[in-house]
Length: 184
Image (cartoon, rainbow, N blue to C red):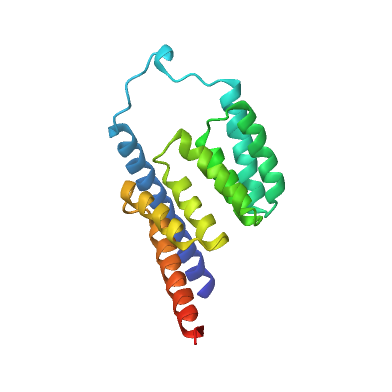
């Protein structure tokens, strides 16, 4: 009796699963056929990809992967190669600045962010990175806060700048209080 019941239960379960697959496949087909397809764009109007752009993108991706592995010097080497191809690639300058910061090369990081800002004065990543290098690295809290404020004036919802500014403001207040209590 039990063996027959188990077979019936198995067949029933298999049928139910098959029905679900058929129903979901039909729904997918209906949904996919109702989604409008974009009109075809003539090839001549598409942005042209050049070997230089592809190479820069590849070098930037390698640099990011090496950063994730905490191989900052190797990451910088890839960014330098990308910048040799396109010295005005602000995203690569921003990424290189982060690596320099993590290596404790705060002045070089600042110089790098200054280059990015010379190209794009509204680069919130460079302004935030500059704030970090000035505040965390060199202890120049007022200059750091000024750069965070500039970034937040451009993008008030930029979470990284909001949080880092809060931390720098708190750190500056703690330093000011500890200095004030040490004076006789």
